[in-house]
Length: 231
Image (cartoon, rainbow, N blue to C red; front, side, top):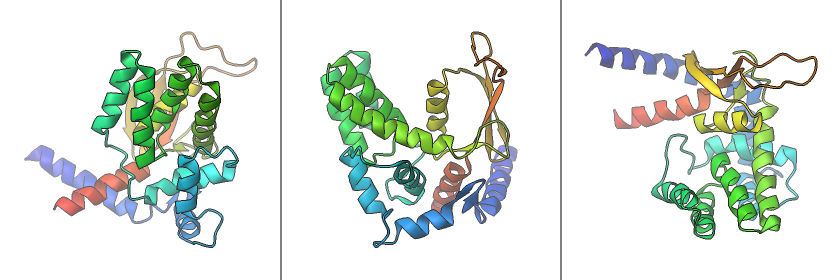
């Protein structure tokens, strides 16, 4: 019973915070939603989604910023779900059946192209299959979305945390920075990752990274909404 009370208290606190969640650090989700819902705006979301699915390499940094953060309002957004198709994708990669994996990965991204992990492994699948042209197209998609996260903060404090839509995206950032997590703690609405310093080779004049912070307010907000639906 006590655990249930703690859970309810946590949800209550998160619900209160979620009321004001449309401004998350540097990201103004109210402004984003207004633009992506406007059919006359260049960032109209159905258009962005169509371009992402088509692997449109003319998409700009601004396009990817709106694509990534606008996904919080997309019907297919679910920061905690992993489909059977996604599981099959990684099983095929483990078996080095890259052509078959590509088919499964494409199905996942057709459902929702804002999936950094799948996009990253699609790059690898095409590269290992010898199709460098398609690998470059998926690289454009992946790095476009990754850069959107990277401009949301610097990850060095709670106040300047990277804003992510999925916890899984935290590890894609770490992967790109060639860093490894040695531990995790939740600080309010922020994941604080302890970073392994052994083997780090920072640029001259810079210190090793010991901690990185990721704001997870939007995934929490999704969890709250789903909990309220089942009450």
